[in-house]
Length: 138
Picture 1 (tube, one colour):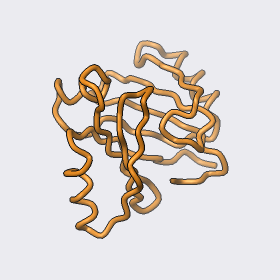
Picture 2 (cartoon, rainbow, N blue to C red):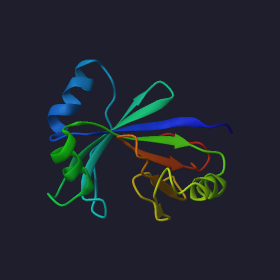
Picture 3 (cartoon, rainbow, N blue to C red):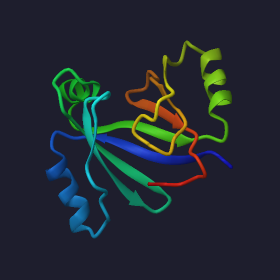
Picture 4 (cartoon, rainbow, N blue to C red):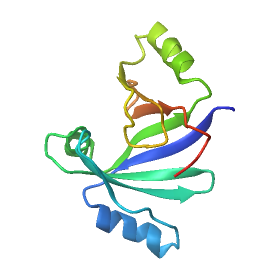
């Protein structure tokens, strides 16, 4: 498996308002999910071989709420599909000057994921990597 774009995370104040735009375009929008550990509600929107992930904060102290307060609504993170999550993490850890890692081995936002890595590059948006099980896109 090669590297690929898994999804783009977009921080929004209101899922209902944001998802209407995509529904009007005729795109399919997943059922809303709540992720209490991340203090967000989300929907996924398949677009070609990737997805858009709309993220609405459920608490003022969530990372997404803080992001919106500081930068406004918009691109929150890029998630890459990687062939070997462990190897990707090791490479990132070797260059800690460019990012800080937070490991989430639990299912995070993608139930098909055995693990998700969040890398926080100093380039204005978050990065995320995941190694999907059986390559299934939700």
